[in-house]
Length: 404
Ligand SMILES: Nc1nc2c(ncn2[C@@H]2O[C@H](COP(=O)(O)OP(=O)(O)OP(=O)(O)O)[C@@H](O)[C@H]2O)c(=O)[nH]1
Image 1 (cartoon, rainbow, N blue to C red):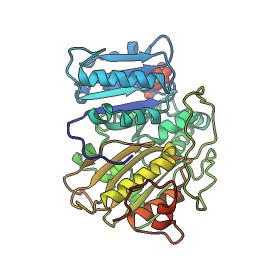
Image 2 (spheres, rainbow, N blue to C red):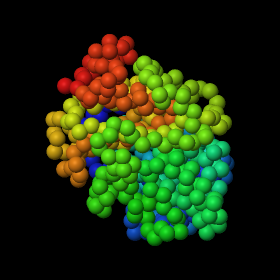
Image 3 (cartoon, rainbow, N blue to C red):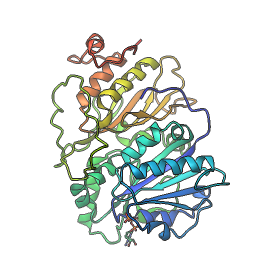
Image 4 (cartoon, rainbow, N blue to C red):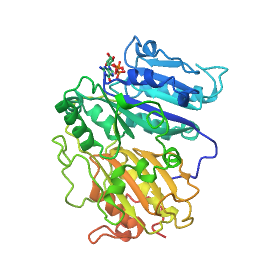
């Protein structure tokens, strides 16, 4: 997860369009795909099953057409096929010969897909991580049935938790109570993402296009539009981040109130059949903040140990860092699970210079993450493990420097 330096070439922007079965992903895409902002976009549709129906339903034809992926394991095989297709698209080879790379790619996932492994595949792949930049995750939620779907399906909760934008569909059909319940359920899982009613959307900009930090800044929205409104609502002075799921009946985080020693996640067994059964989960988000400049090595060490010890629990991470070595140019971090997208640097601070890292996790121990962050950034909490304790821990990564 250690940042390795800013990417050198201009990336293809990628939007992940997700949402549960029948939520209205294809309908939304159809409405927006003719927008000039998507003029040079390729659309990749990933559908589960033998017969890929959705590509046939996408009526408007973008200049790069619609590429259909189908028939595979929702999490692994399709991910492999998706990776291959994205490489081909970027290089103009394979399935898309003699075609210049698109400026943008919109990937519509199957309604049952967990977006986190797709995002981590994007960030961990040696080619994709250099060639693509994630513009945003857009999650479509059925306004009437959303609350029930979220209560019953873990994948739908994860789709909402990692979203940069939530698009609420079917408000024309939904009852006021249904809509309110859906908005509440979405807000508990992801208090940071703006919720947009599909009926009010006029164009792709700000929805399928332009969810990234540079777009938000060029629209004059500020860093918090990208990090999430909660980061600002919460304010820079307090150490506690806003959490989702606090009153969520599905929440099962048993560790919020006491300290845990460093521990490794159990690896997810990819050799066992995938289990999409509903589990009691503990999806939550919080932000880590400090106004002290942070050494690059310190932030790299924090991220690496966090990835080593809790990477599987991180659904998404976004951050902006006040670097000690270059305080005038904020470092932008973007990660998922144990992987980081190559970091970018902004030319200047669009707001007050302060390090903010937003973590969206499932079963992620907030206290542990805070203590680790404090140990690396110099703001030791009273009962947090200090530098010596972490360096003495056998899980600490040899050679990592602390808070220099
Ligand atoms: N009334 C109404 N119907 C909608 C709206 N959005 C989608 N639908 C309908 O909902 C049904 C499912 O929409 P799709 O766009 O196919 O949903 P999807 O998320 O792509 O579905 P899957 O690919 O099966 O996951 C279709 O019959 C749409 O016409 C909306 O805002 N209002």
